[in-house]
Image (cartoon, rainbow, N blue to C red; front, side):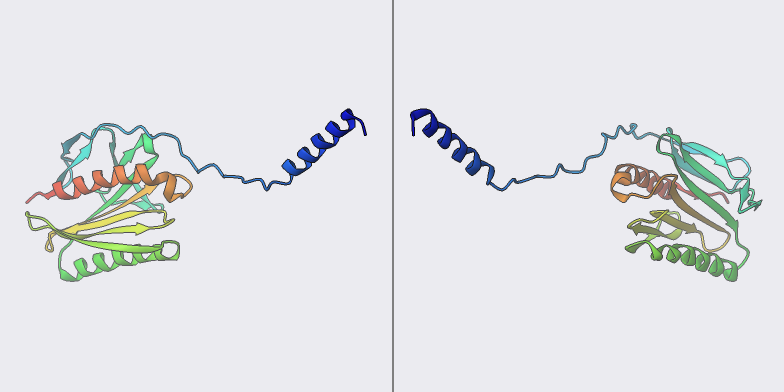
Length: 198
């Protein structure tokens, strides 16, 4: 065997041995686009025709709701619309006349929240007790639910308001997380600034 044949054999052996190594593939981590959120800023909103006032973000819009499942909505039903997030906080207001109406409103809210357990992982309930004697519950729904945040507030005698936050998009808790956390703080600010007019 000449020198050329010997070198050729060595090169072939090296190539074969190096190709026998097991390839290690590292998957790229899942990433999402960078989220640019507006600076938090609120103003007090006082709808003329309704017996309440509350703070809403300057980067959202108050919309009077006109229909609900093809029926006329109550005169003080409204939405807080987040155009940049494609989200709405749907709010329904009811004037209550007695304890039976209050109990019925609370039970309906509870039933609507529990309906999300089909897809949700679990539901956290946080009682609300404000200095102005308003009480209620905040429901935080974990998992792939259409509405991750709901609440109700009442003065236990005349007024009851319920809210549900919806994102008009395919439900993906991971990609919605920054928008949800951002809007959740806005809804909490609204709840804690809520006042019913006497």
